[in-house]
Amino acid sequence: MATATGPVNCVLITTGVSYVSVQDTATNRAVPFILWNSLDGQPSSTWEIENMWVSMLKDARNNGKVVTVNSVSDTSAIISSVQI
Image 1 (tube, helix red, strand yellow):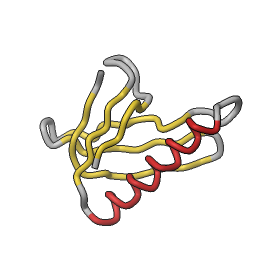
Image 2: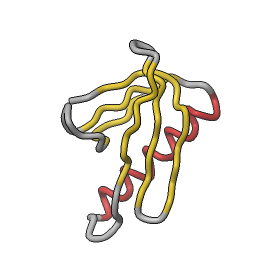
Image 3: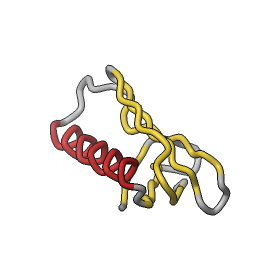
């Protein structure tokens, strides 16, 4: 699982795709993650969790909070969890 901890650089929401970039404090590099890549066919519970992540990440970006974002695997950018 890939992990990045640091401040949120940006949150980009578009139709069907959403990204977030975290400035990892361990490497001082921006790490991009994918919140979702399609809204088609997702169960409502998944959609609700992803909306909650967007709210948390926007709040962290706006207020300078540190987040930890985990992806589903070391070779994937798809988010599995968000912690503030």
